[in-house]
Image (cartoon, rainbow, N blue to C red; front, side, top):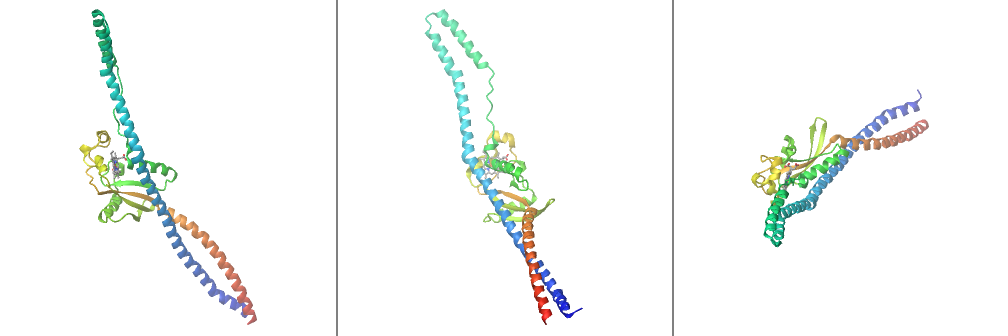
Amino acid sequence: MNTSLRRVLIFNAIFIPVLALSLGVTAYFVQLEFRQLAEQHVLENAHLMMETAKASRVYTTEQIEPLLTREEARVAQGVKDLNDVLNTQLPQALQQAVSGLPNTKQRQTLQVLSEQIVQNVRQQPRTIPEPQFAAQSIPFYAATEAFNYFRKRYPDYSYKEAALNPTNLRDRTLEWEADVVNIFNRTPSKIDLVGYRDTPEGPSLYYSAPIRVDSQSCLSCHGNAEDAPPEMTKIYGKNNGFGWKLNDIIGAQIVSVPARLVNEAADAAVTRVLCWLAGGYALVFVVVNLGVHLLARRA
Ligand code: HEC
């Protein structure tokens, strides 16, 4: 073998592993960086979702609840007016008509008749429904339900308002969720918590924030079971979701995302970057080899 070829071969015996090693090391760090970026991105999404959930809570409190209260008041007023007509105005009007008659016989006949009319009208079956509890006006219900619609398009994301002692049992904390709530309880200054946990579908990333009983108004439904609206306890019972205290942290909002989403997004970007890098390295390889070849021939 001629010496110039041997030199090129020796050079490449060192150069190729160095190139490969540096490509490998770069790939490793690029992947690390990209995964971190992707995690940040997913967490920002989770944070946004939580803020959206909070917004739907405020919307319910400020717009839906007053609307329902006004409608209920309107219906109650209507029922009261109706009863007023039946029990007072109609009998009074008939009485007036009776007393306006000049003839005693006619008065007596009309008196009997009018009493019958009033009786008949009162006895007509009337179905005025009882006031019903509308969970739609409950801020936390609204947030969960709104998120369920969101999930139809983004099934990977899940949202829960997990409570240690919930009104609706679907909101009861699982073991790991209770741990999260307890961390918030031990460190009240904490405003959010991020972590990974293993699930049967693979690792999952969660973002959580504490739920605090931040207003006296909450206690009208979550304080003493006896003080809660009866329409509410008829549905949810009196055993759970009560006994909360002002300023207690009773649960946590938790958004979960499969970690696979983070990795998939990152890895796709890493692959693209590595393709470009590999292309660049190949170019360097060719140019350097040409140079070495020329030098080796001249030497
Ligand atoms: C009018 C009664 C009422 C008021 C006032 C009220 N809640 Fe609720 N809350 C409920 C009901 C009913 C549910 C269960 C809704 C459902 O079916 O998801 C609930 C659910 C919740 C949940 C989800 C966990 C669970 O218990 O199922 C949280 C958290 C919560 N409420 C916190 C609060 C806070 C904090 C306040 C005060 C800012 C408040 N609630 C005010 C009635 C009320």
